[in-house]
Image 1 (spheres, rainbow, N blue to C red):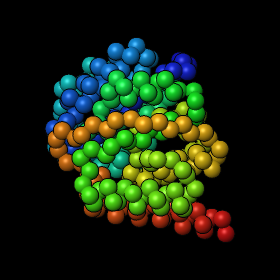
Image 2: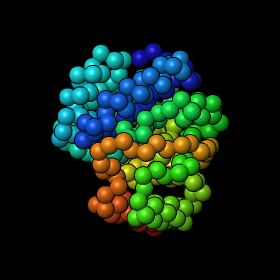
Image 3: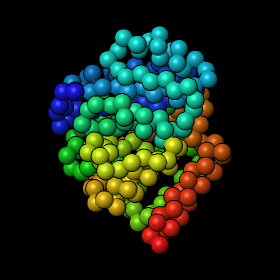
Image 4: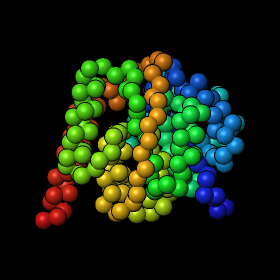
Length: 236
């Protein structure tokens, strides 16, 4: 494997049952990255989709310079990102959700801040498309992570850019959405640095947001408390 430059980017796109959005989303990300003239690669993880997501990816992006991985089973958001990190090769790793592809402004915000910290953490100016229940869950989730783990960031579940060296020291255990907070918590414990800045979130255009379901919320809070109590027992 050839050594990468300090500003090369691996963009991971996890997808599960995203036939409505996947084609436009991936193409938007491709266009924004190409316009930036930054050395990059795109890693698409089809996380066991049951609809036409895999077919659409293969029909439209098999010739694109990208790593495409199709999982037989749905492993979860964290599992898909973990696989994407394993398959990526560039010196900085970040991800976007299918329902909120990169914009030029968002990419510029990340690129302009590379080097300021080991992890760049973006926070949403406004959570577009969130119901009252989703906003309440988000506030409670944020409060608990800040309280239990001593973090003081504004957003634990949005786009984050990682220096690849993190993953030489940090192993990812969680297979679901809590994975994002897990990485930040473990990074803090190992004295990695953070830099946070605001970005605009795009409203979802179609399909359903899996992470917004009540089942997903219950799973996320369960994972949060499991991780916390596991840490307590380790200290004893």
